[in-house]
Image 1: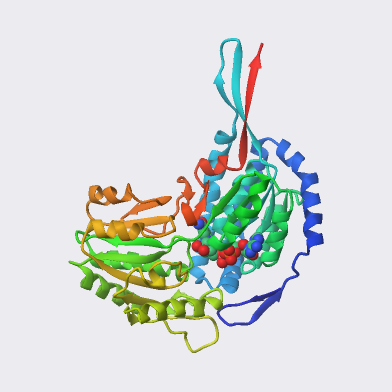
Image 2 (image 1 turned 30 degrees about the horizontal axis):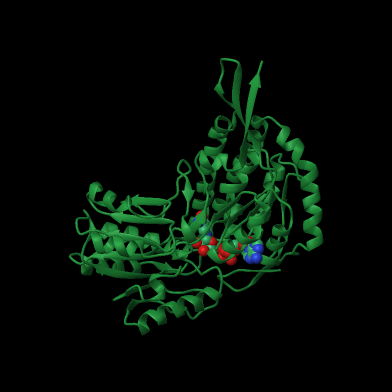
Length: 454
Ligand code: NAD
């Protein structure tokens, strides 16, 4: 499998893909190793993950460079991702023992009762490429701390980062027969679905997620899905600072080149401030440098996958064909690499693919609305349900809409944000189940009820 640098189109390195036979061998290895790992005290497993946490810091420079080289993420954002991953691991290190400890529910009388949390067994972690550390850490860290063995399949677009993760976990004391990486494209993931694993945890597109859910369903084992989004942001006319709000919205659209599950993908602005907002948005956008992700001045690097250039051009053409006005951008840069100017469109509506299907790029439509009712209806007009953001000086007004939205996350005066202490979950086409927070610790264990008489 060829690993290509999306900024230069040069070959970084070739990696051997796993075969069906090697996947099976790794499964046999995990089957042997899992019981001893599960039998360790949780503190011992936490100690291993603590060493991994330290390694992420001591090797930070190398890791960030690898990530930028294979994904095209601006270097500062690669550093941010590593810091963010460490913050999440810190949460799991500090809180897991408490949520995995046995719980006595009845301590007196003839029959005492308690709950014991047992690992699921061997789980698959099939991962996406856009934030390989963050989306990986959500799964393999609590899964390992909970006593599971992990079959880790990084995305074919983040394989080198995945190999670093695997090497560092082993160096931290996680036994090789408890954590195994399988390298390759979708078919390698498919082989994991064929194995009798005890849980499947997937981050990626709705299309693949749905296939996995259907294939795993007859096994009756836990299946967690963190999928895509079409996340809206609504700007009310009472925002304190239109310029700052426009800058925050732009950041939500273009951070990681728009390749975030919770990126802002559509913006609704009250008609009273629409023109000023669009002017401010454009002003900030034109100042952003698109280019070499290793250049500290760069705000937007290349897209990670070349196919995305064509996909985004089609979304823009569809919108323009239906009456949208492209105010800026949308062209491929004439240079090596998968670079695209960020784009902004107005006169958009929900007949356009741009406002309905996930873009996953630095492209956004800004739609004028007459007030809160229209905005709330448009925000809700989607099959996705990941996040939604409202900017306003009135929390009460924002909350009245936030309460009605069928999304896993809502934001007031912020967006495109994930916290380790809160559950991360999508609804409908955005996913199933939750990671992070104490709920994301309990996802990887099963409760056993003890009735103890005498
Ligand atoms: P993808 O669905 O193309 O691939 C994800 C993973 O699934 C990869 O490792 C891939 O090799 C594997 N895969 C592909 N076909 C498979 C099959 N038949 N069986 C088993 N595995 C298979 O997604 P992607 O392009 O890597 O990621 C982008 C998507 O992920 C976007 O939709 C984005 O919104 C979403 N995402 C969601 C979250 C979240 O937390 N909700 C986080 C990051 C990304």
